[in-house]
Length: 505
Image (cartoon, rainbow, N blue to C red; front, side, top):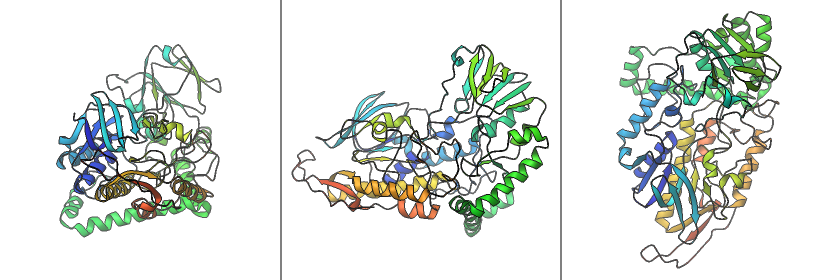
């Protein structure tokens, strides 16, 4: 690996791939992607659990610059999505600039040289610009359960599925009932002798309008471009309608909740079980789940729903906070990810020597979800306050990449050595977002949600439409940055310095 690059991208998921492609298209040739795994895909590489699939329609869940007319279903599954992502990366020639099996242990800003110094598993390297594209769905959240280490059977997280274990006839405890569990529980329920589901909080589940895409429709998509655009527009409008409901809970979200209530009544006839599965908060406070078989699988004779969190593990017994117990052969953790405490934040040290995590102190914030004051020439993709309950991560990542690409290419053209977002611009942006979240479904009810950070603030959600996200986040405004200009001789000597006036976003 070369010791210096103009841009280092950490992570080879959808956001890292988009960044590398767009930067190279814009003429930035010296880009390298560092990926600790052995292939592309990010979360779609890591999550291989049974039933893993997307809850955004396939037509919307793809790169805008690489449309795919051959999706097999309305909602793509994990193997198909991974193959698509990997194919785009290789078709665009990213193999030549990707270093697989290289883990980044740390990245520190050096003010004297205006570069980032990286410590990696292949040695040290430097970069003029750093793009942190590890994403929030990267590292599994393993609960600190007393006695878990002493469990005599197999234990694994859904994002690190153990395919070597045969679950046929086994007694299995599933801890957690989020988006992953909703997908894998129906698959393993058919195989196990007993399934004990520990549910700390009930989730709203809506039916998923999913079906195989007929060959005729695929042919029309490939040969009639306007059809695919029209279909995508219809699906986009439907998703944005859900987005409006998030922003206007009364009466729109309450109306959607009625659908959830009716679906639950139809799927679960047993009143006692239905009471366990009925949430006590407004739809949208937690992530909305979509499934056509999850609720139905919980009615089967080999399933017991424990409406409680887990207190501890004693030997082969899982003990709930309500005292209920289950003796099992395996434990599967469906306990989510480090969403707002991304591990990459512990690795990046800014101008004052403190890590990104130390700056955030439990409440992540970034200008346009992308730039953090005190971290010059660095960008975070899929960062804070950009999560939507109705849109595609591809749209978010591409919007951020557009801003990053413009910032880097402008800096190169103008001879800027350092870009550091103004503290006032960042504060104004964060204040704007937080004010807009007031009264939305994201923050309008009290529930235990990964939207809410360690300090009780919603640091995850985007309060407006996808269109507004694209409009605002794609834009690079130099006036919102403190800019240092280096007149250089052979790119080494610092001659002059200039800073723009700080203004509010």
